[in-house]
Image (cartoon, rainbow, N blue to C red; front, side):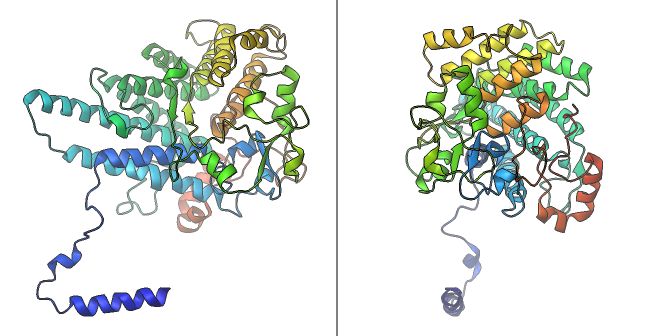
Length: 485
């Protein structure tokens, strides 16, 4: 095939050399020379949600880390082998190259747009331009927060500039976090909700700036709570400010991207579980046994039945697909939405905030109950079943087992099913539920970060070594700066 291509290239060169004017040979008549800012934003947005939702073992193994799912035939990733498939490299590249790079490219394109029309029409377009810039900043902050929560110290101030910084330095994770919170605050305050933004090119909120404000503020809240164990005063100030500015408290405000029923824009879980025709995953006994013990009504949505009940596979073991419950049909629907923030997560964070002594209003029990309710409602549980579940002494906040970290952590784990990275963040912060590494795992503990990409270790070795020393070692079980307990 390469020979055919080369021959065609040579012939093309011969014939083109016969023309007198060769200036138009550099013109690409197929691909556009400039991509509109809106399209760059759309592409970045979809790539970001795809990466978070994906269950491809080449890209996203957080469901496996959190023992929401486990593998059947090939169990390497369930046992924490992240190097064979270069998973850290793929996760890193998906966010830096396919998300952050497009968002960066969108900024100058957006700034260069020229608007025509009446004075009022131009003024509206200018206001929308400002809103678009703030939303690009919010998406960028979200993407960087995922990188920090995955790796720790990462390139930030020198990132995405291969000319000036081909080998970018790694910035301190806590410093990045606080800068992101500041940018999210500026963006939230800068959005003018009387005007739109990206419109239909915004696959999450359809250009609704008020909802983007809530997403930005909810992310500020999560990051502030993550920081509480190391800087309570700062965390308190930022959490209260975020809540005051308005956070996601309704499922109607969830940050979700609805997929289509036709490829290539289908739900990545459908792609990985159904369209591939492979039987690679089953839910684990870890999560199913916990939900069985609570008679949790979400089981009917999360899983299929086996033998008249719900049966999970052993994490990290070679589980025979036919002998266990499978992933619920709603999750593998081709058009099922991908969610990156929801009301249940916000309410659990608020319950934590109260327990941590942060004056966000309400009670821990009240926010906890609202969080569980929001999750159950999202998954279509009836009002009667919700009331029954909340009345279960093992679920009711006052009587549920353990300290507040366990009460909140175990219910957050169940609510964050199908959201592997967010469940991983919650588990690292609260240390609940108690997870045990599989018997054959490469580590004796559940991973607390991904190791740096092998490509970075090869090409940017000096900076990777410095970052590794700064975070306490480039291992899967090194705790991030905010994960101190």
